[in-house]
Amino acid sequence: MTLLQQASALHAAGDLPAAEALYARILAQTPDEPNALNLLGTLKRQQGFLSVAVPLVRRAVALRPGAPVFQASLGALLAETGALEEAVFLLKQALAQRPDDALSLRNLGQALCGLGQARAALAPLRRAVKLRPDAAAQLALAHACREAGALPEARAAAEAAARDPDHAEQARFLLAALGAAAAPDRAPAAYVRDLFDQYAPRFEEDLTQKLGYRTPEALADLLREAGVPADRSLDVLDLGCGTGLSGRALAPFARRLEGLDLSPRMLDAARAAGGYDALHEADLLDFLPAHPAGFDLVAAADVLNYLGALDGALAAIAGALRPGGVAGFSLELGEVAPFALGEGLRYRHAPAAIAAQCEKAGLAAVAERRAVLRVERGAPVQGLLLVLRRAG
Image (cartoon, rainbow, N blue to C red; front, top):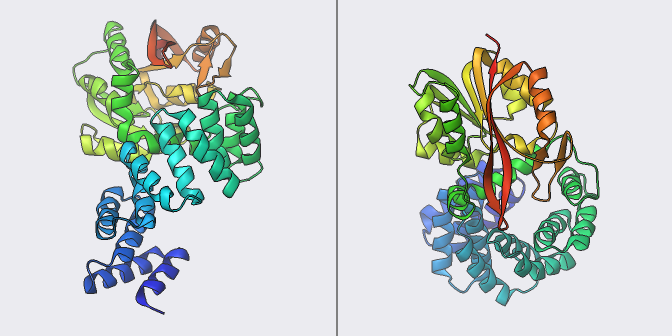
């Protein structure tokens, strides 16, 4: 067995450190061994080191520019980094030579969806499902069909994915958004993490330039109008901090600014941008109870719309505030009480229900404002900005 075969076998068995050591040994002997470069890039991708993985696989493609296996590998990797146009080009190149590569078909469909081309994504995703009808492909097809308006096919694909225990929670969540199942109390944490991991590279550009998003700035304006001092005197927690877009709006209030998010790639971007004194990867319902009376201001811009039942989150926010502390957050507005799951896979809350839940949590309303939170599919998304205070 060659060193490359040994390394590949260790890699397939999940022994990444041993495989990495062998790949490095091979490349020390033969720096331009394309298979070792590609496989090491794949390994670094699995470890989450995309900035290391990309140049390794690019070298493999440069050495063997017509090899579909390397084109497919780089295309999948670039899709994860948000370089969707180049990813689509490479995946199409690979599929021209290997038209029955089910994984590349799925990756192409998902990249096209990321570019907003859901209808174009249907053909490769349907073929991927035909070739390999696993739950991951079914779920990808279901999401594309939902975005393309092919709702009966979306339901059928989601129902197929729901039969797999590893994908059942996300599939049932999608079925709920399609009106084919009861809405759960919250979006699955794995769905939210994966969504924003994939979205991280293009998050700010899409939100601010394509969707007209300025909720963090609007929330900061309302905090000022409510009398919250913007004199860098407060200990502030930015829930769902993402890439740091909301942190920049909160910075004038903060003596110490901490960020919390489920997505490690969002946190990587926030860390690179700077501005936070600490960043935490956790679910807010786990983090907040572990930090009682830890903050003067807890803010959540475009975060609580991934929760349906808000009682637990509001109680946790109140508990994490010091006496007299302030909470500020946004919600998408709906007419169904207490909440409904919208087609956009975010929850909408009825204003009367929100008021009652805040009061129950011990948060007294200080200021509120209705606002357009973003533009989605050409239509404004109506929301509510709230500032509340914990009793002193």
